[in-house]
Length: 400
Ligand code: APR
Ligand code: PHB
Image (cartoon, rainbow, N blue to C red; front, side, top):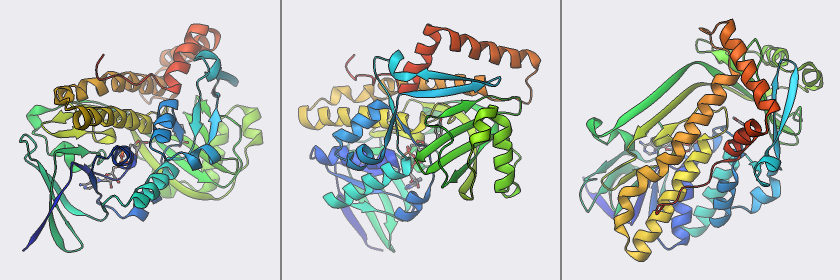
């Protein structure tokens, strides 16, 4: 069979937020890239994911020239709430971080904006690619083979960006003995429900209760996103909308539950919780970016934001490589990313541990959680620690 040979500077595998954002930033710097995605564009846009953007990601989206709709429709939040023991504590993020805040704007919308920008630039993308496979990663001339619409392709490139998520091919194409995986699997998941109902509060509420964790989030003034912690054996079919709403109410402070407006679910799904990191995040000319290299539990809203900070590091690195010939910086990619990743892993693990009900936990564990929350609520140092992690730690520099 004939193979069509293509050539680019950076081959990007995966068109989630990592791949799309990297591609957009590179294109604006005149660095050629080709995007290969296994699914259709509609499938990618149909996935409901998180919705809280750190300031660093907001700034990066502005730098990528894709912020118009976010600036118009997104909502800046200067605080979040922690609820426990029938108390509600507002953490004033701005007051504890010198005025920083987060932006509530759905990952789906970020993805849509990036897809449209890519199309407008006419940068090549192959959606519904099959058998995507990187080769010769340790050589100076790697390539990625794939098939698309019944034709075989060989994409020759300088570098490969593995942006293909936790189940992608990029990480699996690194020899096992060159990677170390660090992992924590939690004995529960989150059942999420999206509805066209006004959010119960203006800011997010992270709630700990004896029945388990709950989160009140939102996408807009008319669209809400709620979650309840569920066991790993739960099936979404067993959760009618009524059952979901009644369980959510039982986990919220009374005054919040009384105000909750319920309605039919637009989407309902269960996601297991996991922490995972692979080291190193590079192999020869392959760089792992975002979920391909690490997973965080959603408590703390760090998954998408960590993907953005990896993109930031790789983007700055590739600018230096292509514009200044600084190939000496290449070996620093992994360590630069990992410094920030591990701190976000710690924050997500800590929030998860403090707010969830653990089936093997006892009364002592429960008192420890409450003491920790009560300490946070009453300590400027505690609130500052929470706030500076929640808004996002500074991006690491390649040359520090
Ligand atoms: N070939 C091509 N594409 C692939 C392959 C493959 N073998 N395997 C996976 N993909 C695609 C997936 O279909 C998906 O569109 O790679 C993309 C990976 O996207 P995400 O999983 O969204 O990962 P990432 O872009 O790193 O986004 C970061 O942050 O909020 C979290 O998990 C959430 O998606 C979010 C992530
Ligand atoms: C969401 O809106 O989906 C969301 C918000 C905050 C989180 C996790 C998910 O910590």
